[in-house]
Amino acid sequence: METILPAFISTNERREPASIKVNEQSITQFPFDKIIENPTDLKVEKKGNSAVYYTAYQQFQNANPKKVEKDFVVSTSLL
Image (cartoon, rainbow, N blue to C red; front, side, top):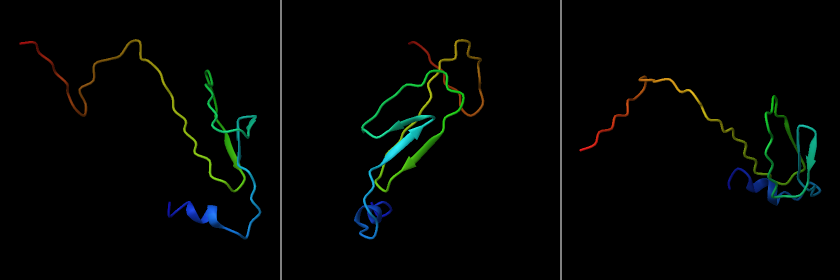
């Protein structure tokens, strides 16, 4: 709160609604959720002086994982 509070209480600037642009799509209505299939590049731009919380993540499944014993080892047994 200490970091973002000054942006909310600033009286010197005209309040401009927040908007973001993801690649070429402009978003002005929040909350917003979108799945981007097979992205090659992701470009995000924010405009306005209101806060926007943004999260991006990637999911994939390794169909052919290889055994790795590098940082730690997990072993199991049945008694």
